[in-house]
Image 1 (tube, one colour):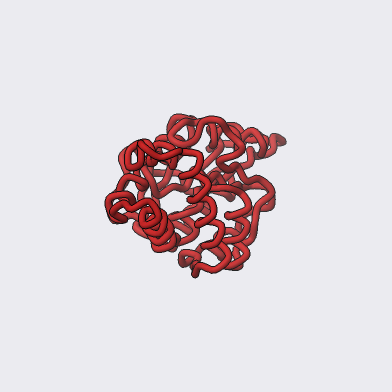
Image 2 (cartoon, rainbow, N blue to C red):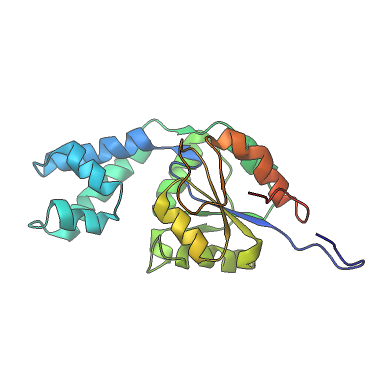
Length: 222
């Protein structure tokens, strides 16, 4: 990329999913949904497999259609909040180095969870928090809608074309792509359909993400 003399380089931005991308929460999610299923007399593994593919209200409609969805959600929130307080969490290798190495104001979190839980998990793992967190309460349409990532870009003052999305899940990948952003997949053995670049681990992706964030000439190739 050629920069005209006297024209400042356009800033690059990185937008992160949280669970499965920066924080390893698979065992926590499985345990929470398992406990939820037991309370409703359902088979834990079947419920968890549905929950992996759908948002909570959609999960309830499929596995507990005869139950009050508001009560189902209240129970799930209770279990998730308790897990944030007492569960064991770990940041993926490279997460701390990556987030501490990004320029101030150049990154955000975009999660289908709620901000208070994200803050709790980051506090437990020692990860730094950004100024912008777009959570489930901040948008009416969640992933795979482009709205969450577009909202984060807006709050950062960024153009979608200047944003890199880091995701591990198909719905998040679709969300980033529909927002018109570059999308890289991490922490999966097989690349999610549509990603511009795939890394088996976050650690492998760290130097490339930092290079992207450094601005024009950064590492954006597939």
